[in-house]
Length: 84
Image (cartoon, rainbow, N blue to C red; front, side, top):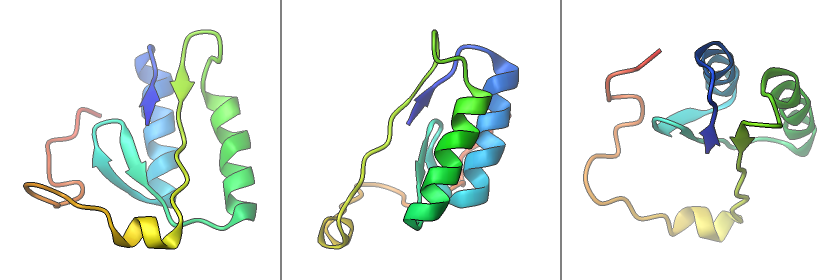
C-alpha cells in the first residue's frame, strides 16, 4: 500500500510495482516474491519515493494466510479504471 504525494513519483512507483505483482486496489498490490527480489524492490522504492513525505507499507502474509483471503465483491485485479 502506498501514499505518494507527487504524480511523477506515484507513476514511477506504480510502474515498478506492476512489474512484480497485481494491483488489487488503486494503491495496493499483491506480490508473491522471493526474499532476493524483495530486497531489490525495497531499494528501488527507496530510489523512487521521498521518504520525508511519502510512505509505502508492506504486509507479509504466510502461505496459510494467503489461502484464507476473502474478497467480497469483484476480485478482478486491474479491472478498474487506471488513474495513471
